[in-house]
Image (cartoon, rainbow, N blue to C red):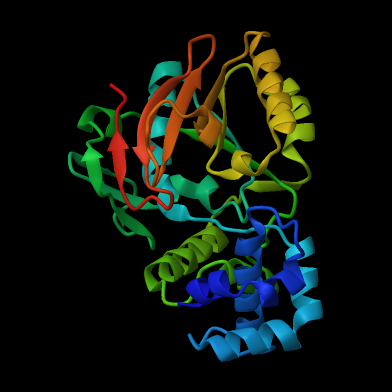
Length: 310
């Protein structure tokens, strides 16, 4: 495997990444190489042959270095909606109000239209059976039928991203595909179905370009009183330095003090875990002024769900 060979001889990658590479630059490197494959700059780079890969790192060094330095990881894994949906239903049931969604790090915003997909759980279904994208949930702990029957009204959908993806742009769609490794056909098919669903939506989410740590407080200050504002994210906060994450949490706590309805549906960072889960993440939910609670354990890409909330 290329990853094994790269571990044995990291010199070609170090020429691009440098000696002090952060943990996510490896993802950026493979995304950069795949982007070069998809755009024809290095079509054989991911053939599986080490020589082809190393040759691409050498011949395309300047453009690869520019990509990994300037382009953040862009994944919009819609299968995570298998866990997000019951999270949204849980806070909707508790709040009893229409939802105003704010996603942190939405990429292309494909998870902001989660209710336009179809879901099949062991105890029930949700969504239009004719949807282009359907999920068959693999459950370790089941989502209750009573929760799936919760009425859900989405009133607004906003996402904040440093570099939001525009799925109406062919170049941006190629960028999204770049962070899906070759051979993962099911993920590619899900992505394509979600993009088509997004394009066909009568009302598309609003995607704001900017740093959500800086922008969230102002957006929450303008939130409505007659709806439940739900801030949510999956994996995005794991990329934040600890001090920036502390600012984000403080913005939420401060906003919640004004009494307007506010909820959080969020994957926890590694340093927040209360379980021993290793190959997945914890999903936490909160409706202020109540406490945060652990709702589920979830595979990183949504391949399985262990629903824990009552």
